[in-house]
Amino acid sequence: MEADHAYAFASDNTSGIAPPAWAALQEANASTVGSYGDDPYTEEACQRLREFFEHDALQVFFVFNGTAANALALSAICQGYHAIIAHEKAHIMTDECGAPEHFTGGAKILPCPGEHAKLTPAVVENAVAKRRDLHFPKPRALSLTQATEFGTTYEKGEMEALSQCAQSLGLRVHLDGARFTHALVHHDLSPADLSWRVGVDVMSLGLTKLGAGVGEAVLFFDADLAQEFDYRCKQAGQLASKMRILTATWCGLLRDDAWRALATEANAKATQLRQRLGEIPGIELLFPTEANAVFARFPAIVHEGLQAKGWHYYELAGVGDARLMCSWATTQDHIDAFISDVNALIDR
Ligand SMILES: *Cc1c(COP(=O)(O)O)cnc(C)c1O
Image (cartoon, rainbow, N blue to C red; front, side, top):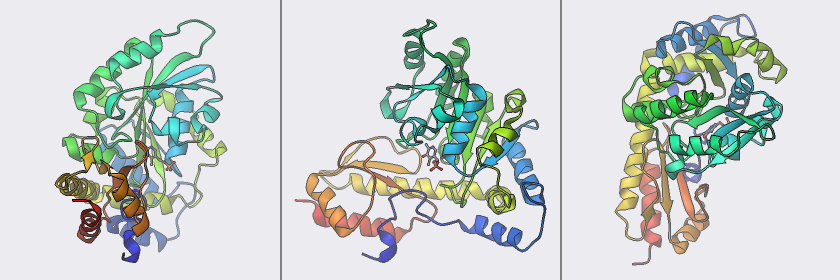
């Protein structure tokens, strides 16, 4: 196997920084500007995000990663005695080492089931209805992920129904948008139409998996929720001194709609990978591919053979169930080599 193939599908952050982000970073690196976000790149990134979301009052805070964005965003809407409703496969539930609980001072995540890693209003209502007494944490937040951990997406109507349900139950809506741009291009909808216009109060927006290097943004559509949030970020060790190193890459991805081409490319590669795996007898595909992920169930001999050949992938949906991620850096060669290895291993 060629050296760079082993991690090609392991994650969408095994890729490097995408060319538009890299070019903007190089430009920012050549200048001496103010620190801690007092610089033209951070100002441009904030302004571009306000335009991107068609929201003049959007409050923007940059942090180092998605765990920090989620945990701090949730800490702005939850006290320690609150509960957060989330899917049982949600990143905040399974992959953040208790950071949301820690930064909210104890809020309890209530993990809920749902096909394709998606929640429904019925499931949310059920989670809230189970306990309404003083002896149980009070549900305060609904956290959704778009695109989901299983590479599926919420339709606009599904988001609307969920946020209406949240509102009627007194829950604020948080969106984990680590792959928000991938969901946007899948639905061909505007950022506003999949966020604040469908009831999202605060979101974590990640561009790292799309093609930035480091950093996520916490975005408040309701400015009241953002009060003193800058102090939360600083106290949590999330204020970058050379902020432009982070925000310049965001400028590069937001200029000229560069994000759109990258997300489209990543999704298209996943679609191709899925289609070609689907043509191989004995391979079961697990969820719809609506973003940049493909989940496949390989016969044991194929799974073991792929491991032996050195391919890396996570088994997030179950043992032997491969999660294969595509990104801007996925090449035709990566796909051809993987398919050829699967074909060679399949027992016909
Ligand atoms: C990758 C990812 C994050 C961010 O994770 P970090 O490693 O903390 O940056 C958040 N949510 C989801 C759904 C993710 O896939």
